[in-house]
Length: 491
Ligand code: PLP
Image 1 (tube, protein in one colour):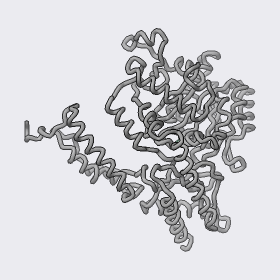
Image 2 (tube, rainbow, N blue to C red):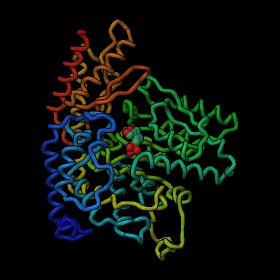
Image 3 (cartoon, rainbow, N blue to C red):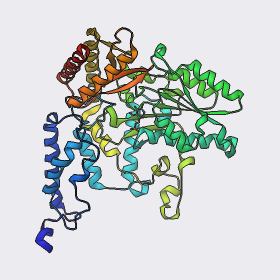
Image 4 (cartoon, protein in one colour):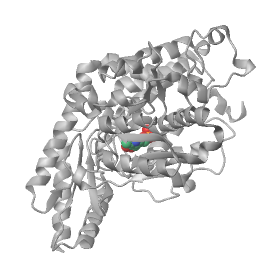
């Protein structure tokens, strides 16, 4: 063909070609992991860097995989922030593993579309099984298991999970009080709740003036006080409003605060509110019996969500959502077009996960979770979590020993919140100093950590959870932070 170039062209799907190129791609990724420590953790590129490096339009003729991989090395990798680096301590981790990677490959290989049971029965049935398995690892109450009215589903993200349960809760309450009452519905959370709640309110049509963001402070380590909730609910009831949704968090994003679930759940129940628990990050830790206490009270919840993609070795996306009453989801989210009708669905014999989520289409995500659970086993997963928490304790001790620093909130899981302590009680100067420290360390490329604001203090967050992180990486990171801090303090 033209220029002879298409001789190398990939066919849409040819087993031998797939074998050859698949090996090459796995080699590429394996080499990436082997050399990951040689990259600056934080990408050093400037906004728009890629535009000038790539052609204005797509190629008319096929190029080779080698050409593309050369470009990945030269042009893409410089713009990648290396979330899988052992020196990545920012935000919360996003876990990958060999098992998760293999599961993703298998899912891409089978490339099914499993919106309803009949579209690919194994996808739905495996999801039901593995989500039940994780529920049992977490010792969730039986009502969340698939055998009764409840059950679990894999969502793409914790944000999607919170949106679907809010829509379910909204429709449930509106069915009893009438559609016109939408403007009276009130949502409760703390000022530490993830921003996804606000987005869910916006998308679900909840009036923003009816979103109660209840203040927390250091006296409860930023956990929501049940008294604050009760007070707000009583006030809203007096004003003729309808409290309908409460979000509690286990492991808040800023500082891993744990809301008192049992007490909050009691208030939710006595006011007929939907109680959702967001344990996106910390939920994984609760598979360890010694951390299960942090979800004590989950029995009072209507829904519970955790991200296996954050801290349970399962590649993104894999957010596990359980509900006690699956009909609340399906009543809000079901559609039944003619072109999807089938005997199994009509006879109500099966779960059609399209009715538990926002999109119609869905990937075979359960494969990667199944791979992770089988190839590591629950005991290894627990050790994995415990090791990160042990490393966080080591980091916390290192910070505590240095008089220039302070630990800001007590560490619970694998996040340490700390900062250079205020000099001469000058909080503004202290905030600036900590900001400069963060910028200087991160721009060195040696490690990456992040920040938050707690009680108007600029606080540094050091979150351990990357699969490759070892004690030496934590100690090395601390050395870099300490050295940079000494330099800043000496100025
Ligand atoms: N909830 C909490 C407590 C989080 O920390 C995060 C992200 O870090 C989220 C929700 C959002 O998670 P996702 O990216 O899966 O939507």
